[in-house]
Amino acid sequence: MAAPDLRSEPAPAAPAPLPTGRGIELVLLAFAAVLVTGALVLVEANQEQELTRVLLFVGLAYLGLFTAAHFAVRRFAPYADPLILPCVALLNGLGLVMIHRLDLAEIDQALALGRDAPTELIGRQVAWTAIGLLLFVAVLWAVRDHRTLARYAYTAGFTGIALLALPGLLPSSLSEVNGAKIWIRLGPVSIQPGEFAKILLIIFFAAFLVQKRDLFSTAGRRFIGMELPRARDLAPLLLAWGMSVGVLVLESDLGTSLLFFGILLVLLYVATERVSWMLIGITFFLGGCVLAYHLFAHVRVRVQIWLDPFADFSGSGFQIGQALFGLGTGGVGGTGLGAGRPDLVPFAESDFMLSSLGEELGLIGLAAILVIYLVLITRGLRSALAVRDSFGKLLATGLAFGIALQIFIVAGGASKLIPLTGLTLPFLSYGGSSLVANYALVALLLRISHAARAPLPRRPAVPLPPIAEAGTELVERPR
Amino acid sequence: MPELVLQLTRAGFLALLWLFVLVALRVVRSDLYAASGLRALVPGGRTTTRTGRGRTARQLLVTQGALAGTRVSLDSRPILIGRADDSTLVLDDDYASTRHARIAMQGDEWYVEDLGSTNGTYLDRAKVTGPTRVPLGVPVRIGKTVIELRS
Image (cartoon, rainbow over all chains, first blue to last red; front, side, top):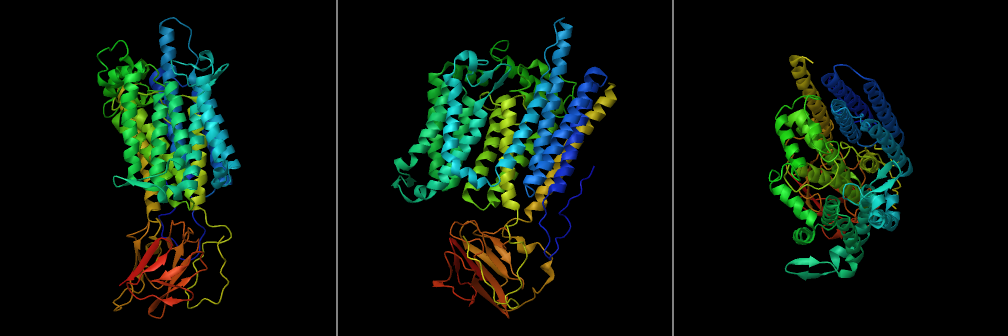
């Protein structure tokens, strides 16, 4: 199936409407739907030899949801980047396929042991996808101009920190799942407020840095060849930074605190272009690592598992050990969808989604997935480069880099490059909060890319006649 | 499922997955040509006057600022400079206006003209008030960006 490339024909010199890219987006979305449906059929054929109703339900829900999302983008952000939504759709679809595949394995196992079949996760994940896309459309509808977000910088910052701190303050019965106090449990649903706090804090950091950027680059004293900013300019920043990281450490959620630290460091670097920030940040990071290793027992355990997962294979190293065996079984080409045993890894559908995919799709498939993530991230960064206001630049950089760092932390953890920390793969892993929050994030990215690519209002992109032919004209004074 | 079918579907799915990636990368590639500062190269004006013209300017070089090193080939069409998306040279500069200046050819010479910018356009040290001739190699300063014409 070859998609027509709408922009490969030579662009006419005459004034033409700027390409919106919605056509290629629709083509790619259809392609993603074909891939996801194909994957579902393969999973069911390999697992059960017959097709079930779930296939129809998931396929139709997927098609309906993303068609609706496409038309919402057409309506609210017609010039948005054409690649972001299809990439997200494909990743989310592959996540749904894998969750369904793990459901089938769980049911098989329960039947073999004579137990009741466990609840299927796929229904909940489809529901979360629907909620996520609702929020996606709502954000596109509500945020007509991303610059308005800068006005709510401090509100966003305080809300973000409150959301982060809330699970730590609630009693453990309401907030603790599997040893991490990062949840709020409301009856059957539990949400992870940290995922939403991530976006709010990126908005705060971006707006704050834009306001104070001149201070960072002018005032300050020099110290061993580097210019250090004044303490009072930094205070709100350090406060927010310290609070978010501190709260997360107390809630023993190291992955998220690493994520926040990294995002803020990159935003500081992008805003000031000072290498000194990177050096200061890395020094802080190394110090923090040493401190955390000596202070917290669970960090020491994680590092021990990372150094040698097979020392205690049947105990603490079981999860990562099985994941590594899974990746090894998959090899280059994978076992085929539905033909592997990714269900042997505990939490295969959330923390270890990557190894499940790696086992069944192999290195080739996993590389494709990582390239799709890469496309998503580069499109975000490209919007950051192209958008004309500094706040939009920083916001898009923060959001795109946030996704990148999160993928690195998860993929590095699952493949034993770095110690394992509990984060989810955006869009692929099972988990409602992560999915919904990431859809809001993507909506913001689309909004910024729309601002970057849209022609200026009331000034159509008509090349002006050469100056020799032009008459006297009144030039509008910019605001 | 028979082993042969399993293997075929397995390979087919991976091939389709990579086809998606390649289509996406193709869109990325077509976008690269529209990158800021290089737009003058893209549309169909490549065949116009580029024969030897002695000491006329043939390219515009950004010497300072965020876009330093960017070259824009000149044909007879005017160059729009500013923060607007449809400018020939899109500046990302807090001190530049949306439509800041225009460099256009008249006869055999290039003239710079300020388009009512907030912070002004400077030819060498002098503020540009009306259309002013730009000799080769003389810096034109717009915000934090400095450009020169080169032969």
